[in-house]
Image (tube, rainbow, N blue to C red; front, top):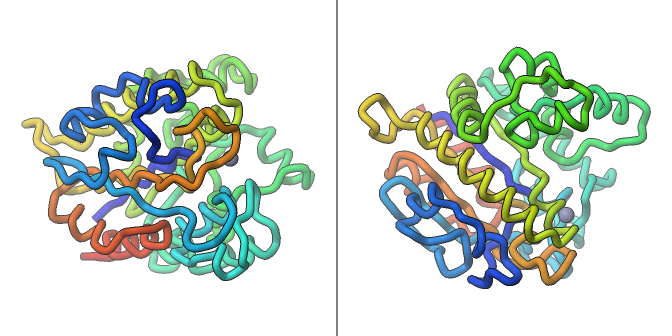
Length: 312
Ligand SMILES: [Zn+2]
């Protein structure tokens, strides 16, 4: 089975409090429909519906301190409890100790070695590669795992050719900030359709969304609500692309939406939180049941993806 992993940085399951939690305030009709009217908050999990399963999973993994991105993303792509191995959570970018866990045995290296098609669907701008080449910028854990697996990261040419997506989904950032005024534009729904359509060309693909963590650190309620409402429209596009001509959910693609740690769900603090994170799984019901079996913390994600993708 094909798996699309939509990684949302810094999204925990928080309180049903619109004063501090943008997920309790944003209008997210597509998500609500998947969850029979529920929102992406603590009280909604666990949930098993017609098209989606929502679990609350633990990103703290028994290690003191607040969970961080380098170790959290490292767990997600390896299944290894890296904070327990090292004795600490670490981030945002991996230090050499965390990076050592990403050299091999990641989702990307495992699928690449097995001759399966796998990729990171984000397109990166020239200045990203300039930063890496000059040593001024470090890869975060997910792109590091991808490049260590010998896989290329997508570039602006790939965005223009429709092989990859903009980190903001719509491409607006490429046109206004990154200096590509003619970059292809999509509305969020189209971007969602594109994301799922591209995912159907791979055994395993991942899309990384980091603006949610950024908005959490900045404690920007309005921005955070806007991001989540945009994401909901993306989700609507993903769902439409998963359905067949008769409107029935197909069984070709399983979509996982999860995070590395909480942050945005509590804007009363600019730090990460120790809240559980959502594991939202969309697709065929029996595939979802198998995928989520025994899933209680971040270490269970990578093995679940291995099982799903490697199943004939
Ligand atoms: Zn962060």
